[in-house]
Amino acid sequence: MNRKSLLHPAACFFLLTVLVAFMSWVGTVYEWEGVKSLFSGEGLRWMLHSAGKLYVCSEVVPVVLVLFLGCGLFFHSGLWRICLKFFRHKASVSHKERHALFVSVSFFLVYFCALAVLAWGPWNLVRSVSGTLSGSSFEEGIWCLISLGIGLASVVYGFSSDTYVSDRDIVRGMAFLFARKASYFVTLYFVLLFFACLDYSGMARAAGVSDDVTEGLCWIVCILLLGRSG
View (tube, rainbow, N blue to C red):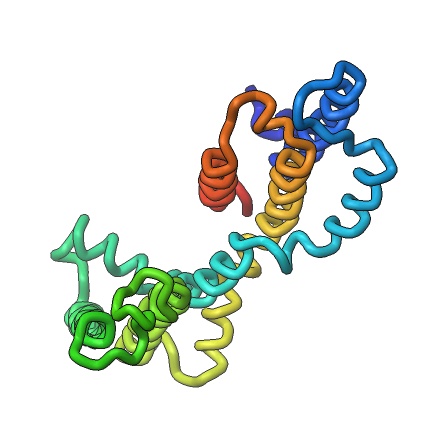
């Protein structure tokens, strides 16, 4: 089947949201336990209140935004390309590229070791009050730290290989995935809207699906759609 004849994921999740709204109305008519209609006065007020806050309230969006910064540098600097090239055709990697890759990987290993010392070292700077990583500032900021490590290693590679020559190149790299994956954020909105409506209406719980499973499915869908949106 021609890919162009298929519905865009954003359209699919919009239609699924409409289906959830309709089924929630059916559920209230037949008095399904725990189901709230999205077409009721309360449901409409909830939708008006929540529709504009999906990006702000979602746990997915901050993670995506932060990772896009670091991973954008990873792709834009050429580090991704040279990693593939190194493992597939090692002989075709130039001396300059090999040196830049070595410097970048060395920096990332030092960065990783520094994080390990910070997390498990004798200083209780980023651990919780109980001294564990669970619920600590380190755990809360782990995606920022991952993105920072990837981004810095990519910048090191960029300057070592002369791919980058100024701070403008760094900014372009950080914006790279936002430009390449702009439609992803449109799709993401409708995905979040669908799961928010599913949660509010209680349709998933009425079908025997727990909140944890629904949340996990939301994360999986958001991740899988990264490879689809362009």
